[in-house]
Image 1 (cartoon, rainbow, N blue to C red):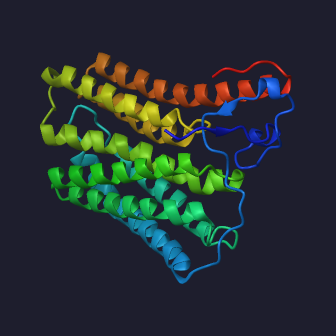
Image 2 (cartoon, one colour):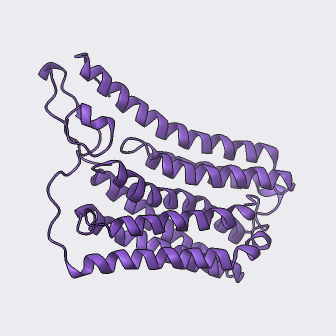
Image 3 (cartoon, rainbow, N blue to C red):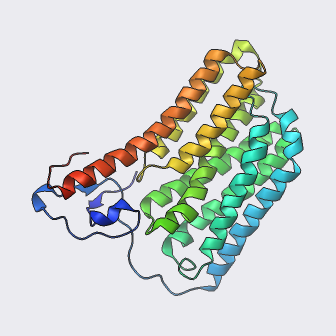
Length: 299
């Protein structure tokens, strides 16, 4: 997804964001499959930088309040499709909101206030969080089609944000945990939540719809796997998607709303998404270790 750049310092790549020195052996130089972190100093702080951070905090707070207010009604509304998520959104939406609030606080810190990647990425986190809050509200009011549309927009914006993260690699661990992880988790969980809403809109709530549900779940899982297999492995995205899908599949099967084989497919696809993220991290780490030992590297 991102253009290839010459290899930055190998030692620094053990943690995202530290630039590396030239490879010790020109014979075994290799090209990383993601851009090197931007080590330039941050530009001057502008008035909108603080406003952007406050908007993200407001959107995250709106999502938190909305999810808490309507959590009691989610359980009943969510029993109208084969992927019965029920209590899962009631738990994960507040957790996601807290992550986003932490991200907003981090974006207001002196070292991040005018960071280039914050200026690019924050708009996607703000809009995605706000739309997700609206989708939850509409879903609680039985306006499933409108909720599904807004949830789709929220998911797409979050995925575009993840794509921007892939272009602007985190410079250190803090950026990885407080900027990349919250937005990636939101993207993964939003995809699973959106899938559930569209299954409800389609009225696929009988065993005769098992095949359709399985095919759609596989298609969405492959999209999630593609994004999880970016940068050094998007484990937060894989976790958000996988937790929601596995819990929904198990809960639906226990309530006889989902066939066992459909639940098994959803669980296996969720594990595949996580394995794709882990495979990405393992391959890059393995290549770095081989390059450090002067051995040839090929992705």
